[in-house]
Image (cartoon, rainbow, N blue to C red; front, side, top):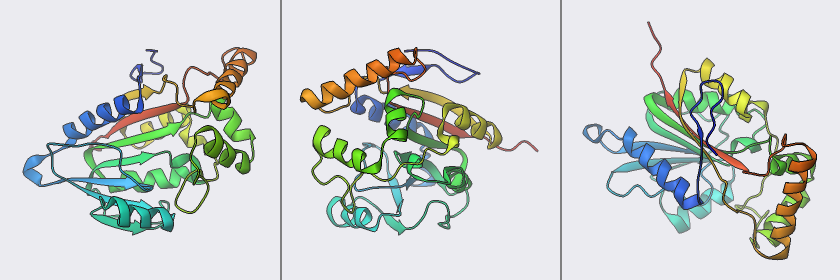
Length: 252
């Protein structure tokens, strides 16, 4: 997969989550300014663990999450946050233009007013800083299923297909899903133009991510069937996209 639309960079395929993490880490390192002290990272919707390895640079992570249980797990078990804030990303008060990186993974689809949350994140990002988003694309076979099935089905899928026994309990995904239009490809493109964000890279998860065994195989077969019946409108080639944006200066 390597195509570009409307001036965006080509969508690049990735082999695994580890592959994605390495590319994100490389981008974050490029945003580091050693002479200015530790790189300041805002993890917007921090959940219960940090996935990116940033060996070789000093950094400070501020985590914000509405799920108090997940934040408690992060504090007690992972112990990798320098600052933890229990709050709503739409309303939490963040210092203006103070973060080098804003990282938000699998969060915006769960926020009704995701555009408001994004505005809050951008205001907290310094000029030249990076916004890293991991988002399930609603215009995929998996996205269609997520948007049209009830929440109990999402919990069932995570527990029995993805083999996550704690799914749906306090501190553990999944969470109710809303898919605000701003997180679609067209929505993010318009948002980026409005907020002076330059898209540096887009990555797609073309690797197999569903659970193993018969259940996982059935879900993948179902996705391919939806792809075929929709004549490719709801693709099964990938599920999620990673966007890396840079905040540009406002011209005088």
